[in-house]
Image 1 (tube, rainbow, N blue to C red):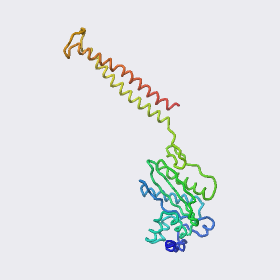
Image 2: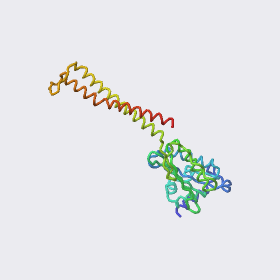
Image 3: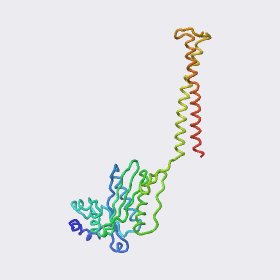
Image 4: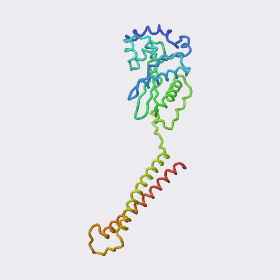
Length: 279
């Protein structure tokens, strides 16, 4: 009651609010929209910008006789009354504010981040009944998708308030799954095949290059050892022709299969990546 008495004078000042018409509100209901609340890492500037877009979408929808923004309300309230009226979060408190403003509906909205995606929520309260008539939540994968999401939420709210078909959701390939339907984003098999093929090709090329260098080194050791033949059971000092021949043979025997394996892996990786563009 104390808050209602503080705000009762606002109704007398509504005629001075730009865009407000009592004649228009007699035909279509009026709506007051508070600023979008920024939360969970969203810059206030972005929330303010989306708030202006939300007001524009509400006005252009043609469903409301008047649309009041927070700046309109703040122009009619002193600082103490702003703290009391615009700082409340409970539905009953918001309903009192809407009643003092003389509008049947009051809208609140929030913009936050959940992981890497944005979450937009709106709530429309019917003032007389102090009842939430619309509650909607939608995700956007990136900033570029926020405006279409706001447009969709406004159309959805109008459909629930005034009847009519619900709008189709915005379709973005990179859009995050909606929190309202619980669906998961389908796996992009083509991109997965491209990534897998590229990794195999790079790993195989690295294995082939290193193995080829080791085989070449072994062949060079054998070549440098001359034509001498190592006799079984004869011990030669390190650095002798026989020692080089043994080292080179071991290198060739160890790395030649790996060189072949690297070449095969590179081919398979390139084939997998290429196939993803065809199928």
